[in-house]
Image (cartoon, rainbow, N blue to C red; front, side, top):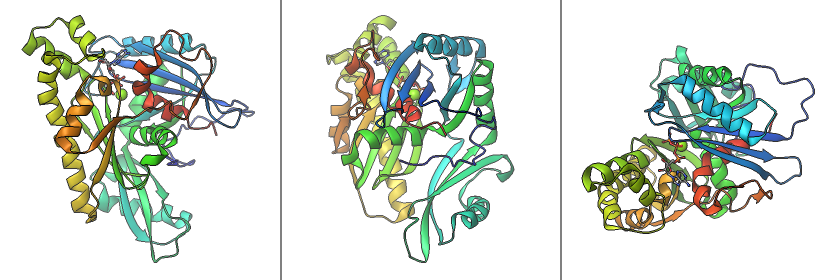
Length: 363
Ligand SMILES: Nc1ncnc2c1ncn2[C@@H]1O[C@H](COP(=O)(O)OP(=O)(O)OP(=O)(O)O)[C@@H](O)[C@H]1O
Ligand SMILES: [Mg+2]
């Protein structure tokens, strides 16, 4: 598991934990621009067990391009989702992402963790194009047992304002963000648990959401690159409406259905191309920046857009790679009734991020 943000990290909440914290469940809250997702995982019995899933739609345009346009609508929807989940705790784990978050694998001289912490600000200045005054940093030594002169470090930097805005939204909803994760790491952690076979070589995990597609590249199980492109099911739907003359409901039914259709093929052609180019660019950037010769071996899809009938096949043909659907429930025990009212196969792809959040154990 990528440790994510270190215990002392300012990215974690500054709010102290309760004195006797015996809670064994973690509530992962994913505030997507299309759907709010809550996953509750019980860590009390050794193996994580998914205890509850709630998915609630968010009104259109409440969140646009990652920005909360209408905080009242969003906080109400978050509150409703948590009430529905039946959780009493207000401690949740959430994440930030987008262009104000950067992760980067760097090489530095081998030093102890404490010393690395001191070096990190200086290192970050070389690698992160943000003003150091307004950034929260964290890192993880990837080969702590190694004995070479250098060590690999995964550096993560997030603009402070991004974290503060997210924290404010959640405290306004009456919640306590016990931990602020990074989207790419949460996706990675859920992926790792469920697809251990994907942890060698270079593979892509592509989370196609409502507005945004996150492209994450893993090298031998280490998430070394994350990019976002603004394509998602929203664009697919708009294309179906504008170019194919479908109504919004008709378009949604096609996108969330099981059958291919000429309408879908047409929009997959153009939007699929955008996603494919995004993946190719990310892979090419990696190859040039790390001088690694390794090629992308496989691609896995998650997010609501992963379900668009025919999209995975089209990407596979275009990228000439194996492209398959990732399943965040493949290796996770699901409590009876956790998915009440939901069709498991239909919602599983949407849960990669919130499951990854809920996999974090309360400190
Ligand atoms: N069973 C389902 N119920 C609702 N929407 C679904 C379902 N299956 C697929 N979808 C599609 O998935 C989309 C939402 O996907 P997802 O939850 O991954 O996005 P999001 O996290 O809300 O968006 P983003 O990450 O871009 O902000 C919906 O807009 C819809 O088109
Ligand atoms: Mg999402």
